[in-house]
Length: 398
Image 1 (cartoon, rainbow, N blue to C red):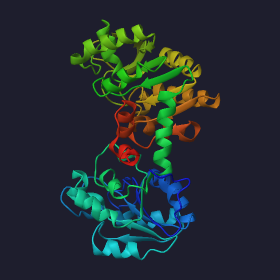
Image 2: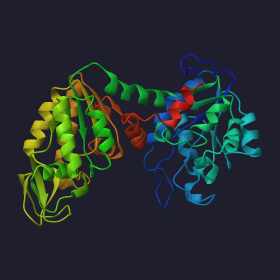
Image 3: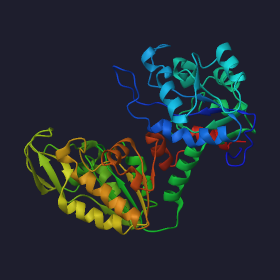
Image 4: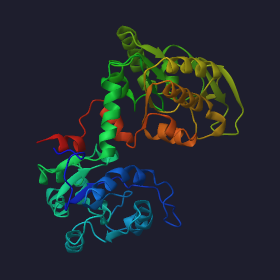
């Protein structure tokens, strides 16, 4: 494995796997959020400044059968050119003669964007011959797509074998790995994890992994009501996974055995229907009347969470405290976000990861006030769970 910091890119074509899977307006097909493109700019600019040229490859959406115009990466060429302050050339195919000719003709400082990789089923199948065709387009391979690092696809994993001595992580992927490793492997204490979201079932593995590492584990979101019911509380019509009541009890017991402070919300904002304009009131979380459902955490819970977070040196946040997409049920999530910001100001290291947590921190315009916001939801979860990600393994393997 090579190192992007010391590698000599002068006169080399860098084939970079980026994650340009950005949202496009359905009518105009213009980019509505360019965060993922901006995240790759440091790697791209470093290589260009070092005298190299760049071939960018990415997927966009989930095309079913070959070319679909709405998933064409041609729609992001103009904006990418503006962000890079230079013309971005475009290949109407990601393999084949046109792509090879355009790549071969690149001069130092030039950029080529390939068409959507997923127009070929061989990409997601991890077909070696497809990966070999991609490998012809560069002299060095750089993986900077953490969001797809958990996929064993041709462009994220298989292609690396064709660059045995010239493969490396980009700055974004390197930063993601360092951020997660800092949380999971640091000796700093206390470490607090806030795990929210709708269902316990989707977070079981990560919770079990964290119980061996954290000092405090705060449970939030819809999954909290499964824990409350497991302890004999009345949760009304709140979201509950009855099949996981015993699992919730096991987690409570393991936390106690490990000396982990497991905090389950004590109060909740309830509503008489799943609607922003529903009737609502604050009650004890185990005393929700029939016909009502919990959609956010209450003020007592916010205060307790804030105290725990402010006394932490390391903070991991994955999953909201309530239905923050509705303004009347966002306060619990916002209170946690603000507590994390204040803890960060006081010197704590804070890592925000998982789609909903990232959406929340962006909604409240606080992304620049925490230590690190992960770009990879599923990838980060799997990495936290202790799973070796194929995209990372492919670079690390000799």
